[in-house]
Length: 216
Length: 247
Figure (cartoon, each protein chain N blue to C red):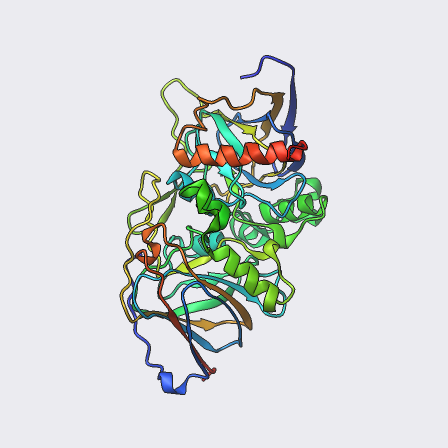
């Protein structure tokens, strides 16, 4: 998919929500059908691990495999429908100034850090801990059982025709954003990634800005 | 390969299958006709909250597909099973599985009411039925493995179904062997992959063989495939020892 760069005309002054999420924090929020959700990579190359659920029936949730098969492409960008486990669009990406987002790389965890880097890395902060804490605090009754493969906004995980998978420096930059329209009432679960062991955050996790505009 | 007794079962086209495999047991899947897609999910047999994790499997081994010497990771940093033999060369884990809507689009209605037990079963419904037998359900469906399926990714990210090629004088049959490194609940469905362009609903039979294998030794090719796998095996073996009562 060629990078489908598309800017938004929405005015942040008119957003109903405008918050900064520090690096290493989890976040939950409910979006209503028709609302627009923007994630801004404030300082560049920050992975934003994200899951979506149907707010009326959380058994229906984001599916990485349904999403990539529906569009026949592994990269997410403008025009991508974020498809649920039931084959329905939860949200659609309507603007994107980064051009490529990952959904194969999953979320880091204490245990995967041990495998990938060293057994001693278990003590490092990680996305799954942020997901679990956010779900435990205000997670609509969901648990570890409800953490399928997620989206990594602004992360660059190329796959080669021979089937190699690598983590590359990001293609994002300060101020780049991705914006999506909710196609139904959806719950948002985010971990603003604290990973320090690979280039997914340029070795320096940074805050992101989250905005929501009401339905027009 | 095995030296002791083997048990063979036929997994007919359209059917699902599940059972708990014990550590050291081997499951061989043989696709005799060369057109099968066996979609699979894996759970810790004693704690199904721990399950196969596509992303951790791919990241740890810097790969976008599965083949001999690679392993399948759980979301807890452990090796659920190792691919000890593979004559197919490529098993997909990024393109998910079909559902009733995909089946109807490709093959037409295919209902029980019209076809009785020849009806068009699909992977997602088969997964839900088989998971239900173990108290699991929609919340437990994660990105699955598709044995005998090759889906390529072009430089621009586009997915492409890659048909298996017939080598001169050889047939398309192939097999893959999974050696379990921890007790694992295996869920299989032998149903068409939604990217397979074949217009006919005809999932072929697949032969399942079960036998006892040796544990992975220090020089096991799956263990030493990457240093990541050595750490994954170490974590798995420590967990197995805990399960057996070690402090």
